[in-house]
Amino acid sequence: MIPAQFDYIAAESAGHAIELLAEHGDDAKVLAGGHSLLPMMKLRLATPELLIDIGSLAELAGVGTDGADLLVGATTRHADLAASDLVRTEAPLLAYAASQVGDPQIRHRGTIGGSLSHADPAADLPMALVALGGTVVLQGPAGTRTVGADDFFAGYFETALAPDELLTAVRIPRRPGVPWGYQKFVRRANDWAIVGVAAIDGRIALANMGPTPLRATAAEDAFAAGASPAEAAELAADGTSPGEDLHADREYRRHLARVLTRRALEHEAA
Amino acid sequence: MTHIELTVNGAKQSGEVEPRLLLIHYLREQLGLRAANVGCDTTSCGACTVLLDGKSVKSCTVLAVQADGHEVTTAEGLATDAGLHPVQAAFRQNHGLQCGFCTPGMVMAAVGLLAENPHPTEAEVRTGLEGNFCRCTGYHNIVRAVLAAAQAQAEQEQAEAAEVRA
Image (cartoon, rainbow over all chains, first blue to last red; front, side, top):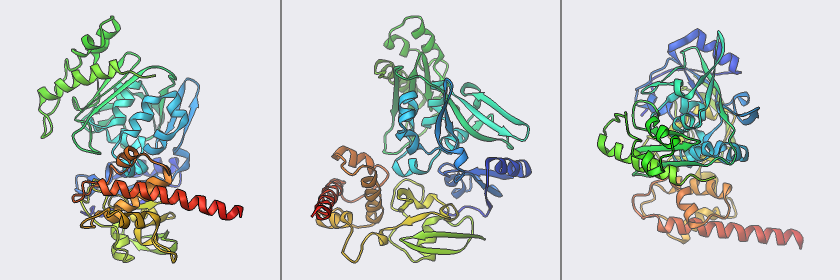
């Protein structure tokens, strides 16, 4: 499978990439690791006229701290996120989620900014961002804005990112030593979650239970009010209407959400 | 067309490529390096695995232009005048293959794995090769081969260290 023809520009800086986006808008797509975009282009589900490559921009990669936040550059690759001592200490759920993406080869290429922008509701990092209450930093011609995880994911593969904006960084509240749980149910190696659950500090996020990663708010409220993990988990699928595919029908996904939420809450590890 | 310059198996390469040319097709069709195979063509099976700056990647999901300025190693680049690479030798010794289609990708994934984790447990080998499918062997001899290669590399390093001391 070969993508349709496109023009290619390796951006010289984040600012250059934003200029190119302003000029080309919807006709352009940003390329980083390419592990969501290139498969779509090979299937001709995406046919951009221009690829703006930000994959080699050092200014967008790497991990640091900024006050109470962990600051993760958009082109930080999953393998580097998973191996970072800083991330493993300050946001271990994020490091673990990165280690669960695909397989080693995919983690060597895929980036956090790419995974969040792609917004696959079954993916690991969007669910992790929602559980962690992170924010994304979006830069465009009009300036920089930050958007919270609960507002960033707008629909199935849709985000709050405007066509002329670039996701440049991710902010995650630092929470060393806070217990967390992560459950991902798959049938095949290197597959997406049939259902996933990430829990930390009273927040519970679900993967593949709807068009975006979701909060299990009824379970969160019950847990906050003193319910046991088992009692709270019974409410994990409330208000959800997950899709059906060859792996699972709607009721089975709702069952998985309840079981995996119980396990995530029971097995929260420091 | 876009101009690219990269190092493949230690040799400088340059040329004009269409931006949409995939790295696997650049390697196979433009450079004639046919070890890496196109298997699933969907980032799943790992038959196209090569090393990009020393890290395993699936070359069916990398554009040749993304390799501009970087180093690529394919299975052709492993053996030296002194003989097979320890991972290649271990695959032969342990019969870590049947039909051989997945083998170049499997070997490159194993080389990448051992570079990151030189002394893996059996479980770490199995999860470390999660991105490579073999439809013949059931994986047992492949895992054995990678563990044997790790052992051989460790012994080789010890011998080299002893030589330096002597």
